[in-house]
Structures are given as C-alpha cells and as structure tokens.
Image 1 (cartoon, helix red, strand yellow):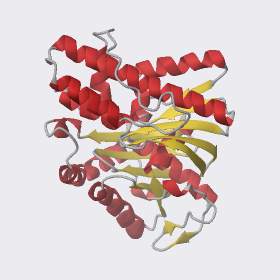
Image 2 (cartoon, one colour; image 1 turned 180 degrees about the horizontal axis):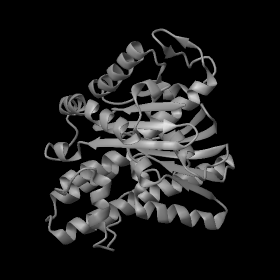
Image 3 (cartoon, helix red, strand yellow; image 1 turned 90 degrees about the horizontal axis):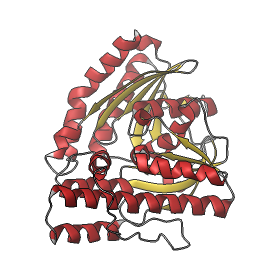
Length: 337
C-alpha cells in the first residue's frame, strides 16, 4: 500500500509517500523558519498563507520524485491537530478534497501520537511497553506506550514546553529559529555554567515546568550585556538546565514504572548534548531509542506511518471516505484533538 502523509500543524509544510513494504519513499518539507524569525516567533496567518502557496508545489515534487501518480495512493493520512487552526485547515482541506475526488480513504492523525509512533519507522525499534519522552513544539510530556494506539500519559509540562523555551530565548539572544538548533550552535563556544534554575527537578513528580527558567533568563539578559561571550554562556547554561531536567524525569519515570526501554522524539530530541546524556543511561541497563534527525522535527512521514497503523486496526470506511478510528484505537483523553 502507498500512504500519502500531509503535515501542516504549524509552519512546516510536509508531504510524504510511505510504502508499507519498502518504507519512506520521500519525505518533502518546506520550512518557514526564515520567514518567522524576523517576527520573533510564529505568525499564524502568515504560516497558513505559506502553506496555501506551497502545499501543491511540495505535493507535486513528492509525486515526481517517486514517479507515483495520485491513482497509486491507497490512503491519505493528514494531521488534524493539535496545532494552529488555520494551518491545519490547509492540510485538512487538501486531504478531504483528494479523498472525495479520487475516492481514497482519509484518516485524521493526532500530531503528538505521530511523533510517538515515528520511533517505529526506524530499522531498530523498541519493544512494547516503552516510555516515550515527547519534546515537540508546545508539548513536553512523558507517556507509557503499551502498544499501537494505547498510551498512558504520566507527566507533562504545567506551563511552557522545552521547545518553546529554546525558541523564546533564541529570539532574546537575537539568534534564529528553530531556537534549539541555534542555541546548540553558540553553546559550543562556552563551558561556563551560570547555574540557571531547574524547576521541579528534585520533586517526586513526572511533570515539567519551564516558565521559571524562562523568567530567570529574561531577567539575566535584561541586566547583562549581550556580547558574544555572554550569549554563549547563556546558551550553554540553558542547554544544561533543560537537558538535565529531561534526563532526570525520564530516569524517574523508568524507575517508577519499572520500564527500561526509553525513546525520545520531537524537535528537541535532535540536541547532541541531550543524546549524549541519554546514551549514558545505557550504562545502567536502559535501552535508548532515537530517530534520525529528519524524523525529529515535524514531518509527514510520521503522519503517513501512523495512518497506516490506524488503517490496519479498522478498515471500515464511513462519512465521505474518512475512516472511523474510534472503536478499536484507544487513545488517552489527553490525545483528543
């Protein structure tokens, strides 16, 4: 089967074609990072307009590269949320229009669930059950993945997410988006830890909190000169604080639930320091799984793959060729769009 994946949850226009026998055929992406950097963050209306301008271009490039035609597509899988409403609307409109015109079943996919399932696209995959740390955009959470479609959220951010802090501090330091990438680049030029706060790190809870860290750094920047050396020190210290919090929480989750197989997904999971610290956990009998970096950030391959798995669970087609996934695909309440 050939699955078309469509991802437009925020500012990335993603189109992927996934072959259930071969794997990813193509995973095209148009990024708007340069566009939004000058505004100091994502501008929803501008994001949706660029999705509208680029989505057919990206789709045609994907079809051309794989030498596939629309008639070769068996399922259309699209991101239905969470995300920016107007951005999601572009991908949803394309998916439903193609579904109606070409009579191809379409499946709505939860963005966070797709990140969790993206770890299963790799050659080496974790065995169920495993603990997944999700660090995607506005979301930082821990969940137990019991099987396909069966999750239990055991911890989540009470305020800002790790990714949001990287983006916001990057803008304050007059760097670019995505924040994590540029914070990591400049952090290489320092090894001075300013010992920024690590909220909830020593508390017996699996929840996260990053707003206090953000406020502390905001005040530090306001009271100190932003020369290159100080920017590097701030970036290094921020990276240390966030990665230490994430490592401490996933270790606590592993100990509490007695599950030694761990995965980390989402944009922040591409951070080299975080990966190095996570790999250190293998010394205490933990099995660690990461995606390749193209699958860490928002992408359509994870949408396509998750759509295929949902199709296998329920092949009934209802309501304008959209598959009803509710009967057999159990999703925690927190995963509802």
